[in-house]
Image (cartoon, rainbow, N blue to C red):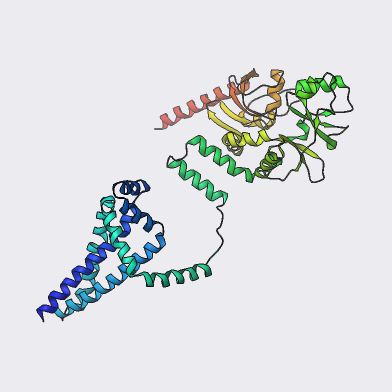
Length: 436
């Protein structure tokens, strides 16, 4: 074996390994620098800062150049190393060369330089930028050809960017909340905005049966009374039937007008189909400047009313608006305490909870509350009747939407049944003890 060959090949291997470490380290240094670090480098060394900004302006070119350099160097290192080991150990060269070269490249050409680069990125950046610009100059002809070919492939494989779906955006919001980027309130509002596309006007409108409107054929005194009692800024006006809505009455303007001329205080109505999504409807409200719209059914009749405030309420409090509706209509939250939807019938409630609630002309719990209170209660107000305390949890569109029911007294039949059950259980336990 020629000693000069061995010495020369060894020196070449060391040089190639250093170059591999250089390319790997440069990649880590450049792409681990933050904008603040780049600015600090520029403040200390304006020339180095300009070099870094020039390199980072085209990251694709930098990556391709580093990849070419690393590939050439690693290929040369493996080839020279294989020849050297084969010449030194002819019998075992093929077995030893591949694992030895692989471990050497990984340890000294990849892992170690990258770790050093991450720790000392700001200190090494000026040196790396100068040497890398020189390497870019050497490979300039090759880079021109590489850039041209990549543009051809990019044009051939180009496809339109797909917008994120609502589900994907909701996932992003959840991740942002988990990582602390968004607080709970912000995430809840974003969630409410994204879910607007899943709801239609018919889901949130005030149904026709609950509408308060003014018939233009009624006496002025009655129109004034309705406007005062309704408590709404805008009321629909029609002639004889709500299917013929002519517009919306501005009650403030109407009541302040000494003549109480409804037609002068009426503005043109905005009509929308019942299947329009709430996000589209919100855009319509914003563009038109209107605050209320008449929702039409498939036959062109009036299905109900919806306001911009109804939609904004969903954004501000989506949990109260949607999450509770998806729960069971009767759900126990504590001993003898239940949350009940306002639409639950008294028959179902009595059957489920073994109660005996009743009210004249009322077949639902919401009507029961209004009957025993003598008026429409607001959220937080309670009524105590028939052995129960019922607290209104939520009111929407002048309707009791959810209540909390607390059983204070059971009917005597229930108490006797409970005592009998306890007595039977006690006898059974005594019998079991005797058997044992």
